[in-house]
Image 1: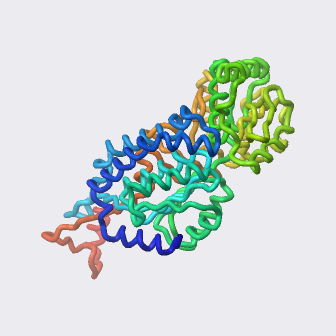
Image 2: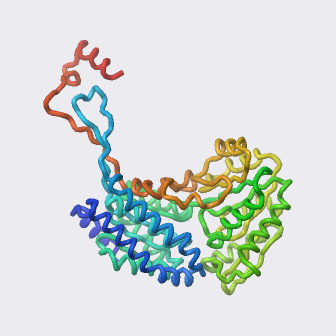
Image 3: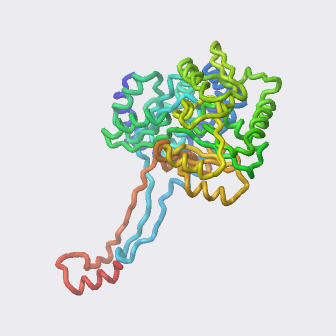
Length: 454
């Protein structure tokens, strides 16, 4: 595919102005809504092929979330698009001021492999709502799902409006050489730096949804059985291949042994008879080999079994993990949970604030003072108190990172805002022109100026 020609055709299409009207945007959102519903079985088959994802998880973490996002945008789009009147300082009388949203233009959306439907289509919903055109680049690591997305979008949208570029690094490089009006990237911090460097050449604004090691803290007051269940949920979901998965666990020394028992019990309830045939596999051999090397970072107290033939890793607990061990040096992206014991909550806080800012943080406690202390001292993208992951599944709050875990946010109105430039407009009346701002300056005019501007 000629990426330069594609981007130029989209730019020409955008300049024609057809994407700006409410009627066009809402009709395009509804087309996408219908197409996703009609392609659900195709997505199930594709995700099974790419990573053995079962239909329940496909709907819960991919299709269902995207449909909820679409419903929210369809409901609120007309209000988001309106100009918003704001006060005008007396010094500008007679005038009125308003903020006017306009689409950025031609957007590039680069999606990862771990949630290839959700993380491709949710940003696209924001671009469509905002009135942009978009080039979508799915990950080559989930080729069946990427192709299914390409087929679906190609069946409802012309390429000059929404296009999908399949392929790998070569296509990524070609696209990043082009001038876009906005780039939305989801992936690793290292790849995010490369995207930002490319965007800087054209001064293109970016949203970077990255990752990092998201900590979990469980203190002595926590509902331990519920904490074990909810942490296990967050860790086995998508086989731990989630940018906001609980990456490592700080747990008070006095309750660690009981937690291990309850975590094992939670896994038994999730997988009766240890039947795990419908659990996700690791995306490819490279990641599988990387992850298996990390299993030596501590004492295996649950799981630890691997199956190279199907790239499967059993949900695993590692105890006696040192902070300088290999598993604590990189994002795990697997159903392995390292455990670190603590006695004083300040030990956890001090460690967390010394690390790159994570995308998520999870705290299990009934102590409001501990909750406030952790929230006041630790910086992170978002998180949960007494749960994991579910803060991402709402259109009512933005989702995004901070520092090393990303910049910008989306979901709900934040997605519309991401692909929208808000123009500040002051409309001056012609029937009166107060002369105090004009030369020649004088003492009298200075006094009037100071009266209005104080």
